[in-house]
Length: 476
Image 1 (tube, rainbow, N blue to C red):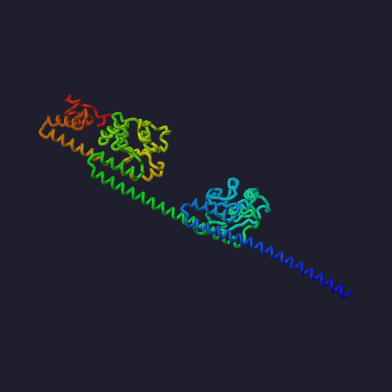
Image 2 (image 1 turned 180 degrees about the vertical axis):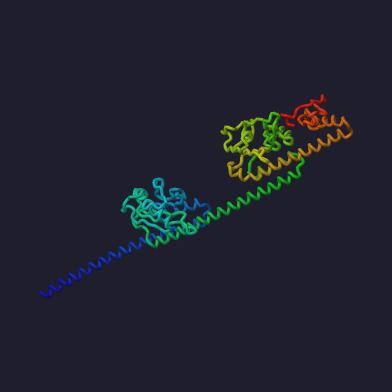
């Protein structure tokens, strides 16, 4: 009996040992499977990082880089949904989506992500930016659905989320969001790899931005050098120019070169006897398209053309004294129409030219490859100022020459006349040389000094009788 009881106890012990061994084997199998799964995910993350690093190496544009990175993380990393967001410094502290890949189904349009400190509402995405640390959500579905981001994520089957901030100069400027369809999907080794990926991406973004800024700086320097070279050429031509056509042709050549425009004109704003402005074009591109227009160009290229109709695009610039931008002239209400056969007018820019606050000239250019805009006008300001100064200087020079010629004519006409005849001859010479209808020489009536007594009067091509008139109410 004792041996039988001993055998039973031994069997029970062996059974317990067997059960324990089975449990241990099951645990080992589970650990093995879990380890295999972890290794699989980690290996997948390694491949994704490797592909992302290649994308970083060959990236040319930031937008393309962000798109490619998201695509790689989804396709190679095996995650459900990925998006990249950059912070906005607006009142709501918004996070602006920049790129995405995977199953999104309107998630980003439904949720207004923010990095404001508003508790659970901002979620791991906002917290990652505020703290500058990686944030995770291991089980989106089972947690209380009290925030819009969580509600919308649950609808789309997202179960896990990791949000990794982009850091530059110690500050977060964006965030990488990776959603998985599995619960607790991010192993610690995998998290380390993804953080490393985000760090590489941050560096790549800042490198591209620095490269783009360098290109912009170089572009501005090139544009400035081009402008300075053009101004030097224009000023040199002004010094050497013997006639206005050469001067204005140089200005137009420089303007077309600076703006890459196809054709244009430049001229002087003048006024008729009624004080109404008109445009005298001194230089224009040879855009003749038939025998008749070629004849017109040949005839007027050197002596200029007058335009009185201001119901046109360039007329609008003259009337308002402001630049006219027309990147779609065919539908612009200010247009005046084109002659039949005229080359296409796809874009137009009218530029008033000022000197000492006065409108002295106007330039019109057309068909730049890019659109005309305010930025281009600001760039041209120094050139237009130089044009205005040159036009004013040219006018002053011409006026000086006319005055010299007038004085020479007066001196020549009066040099052999003396006595009372000198004054009579002087008024005739003044009127003739200056092209005036009337001229007179007079003296104050003393002692009152309130009236003028003429000594000689020339009117409408002949001498007339002298007169005395009161000074009150007269220009004198």
